[in-house]
Image (cartoon, rainbow, N blue to C red; front, side, top):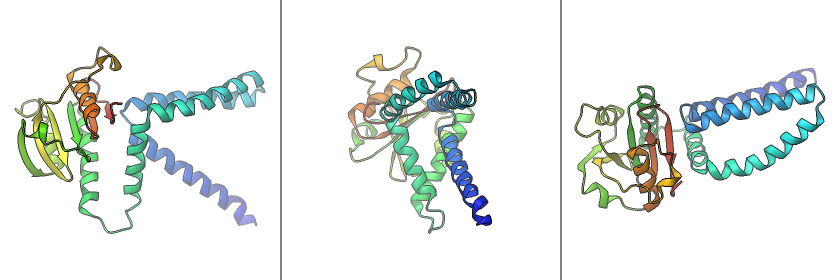
Length: 227
């Protein structure tokens, strides 16, 4: 019993630490990071209200959280879907590493490095809807995906950087791809450029998953199904 008295809390702390680590590593440099800091501030205020016995503030936070949870699930549905898929891939580390696992790791590293260096990029990951209509008007590559190739495409001194890269499976299908702009540009801030509008636009017309890296801030945005 003495061992269980500290062993079970230790397991709980370890599980919470792992969850927090994966959340921070996934959302770092994305629009969600500011939100996470805001939620942390709310949690601190809530803990303080309990400690100081402030029932009114405690009830207000309860109401806020109940509404916020539903709103967040709707607003950040694409990020949550991608985060869950990434966690499922991480869970395969004790299994045989497949070609697709290597591709996902390589792409994640590329996105991180491009974000760190503030290199603007637009990635379109094909799903069920064919993207041949757009790829055929671009520079066809049909090259096996590698982080070095992807990063070299978006370097501003190369002729292929101005446009999107379409990825089919583990293959870079095309580069310098011109995409349709968003139908409803009011969904985006006026400060956002063509890259973000094109990313939202192609997500409105297909079921592809879009990853946009801002050249100005290095932040990573994800779009799917027009959101």
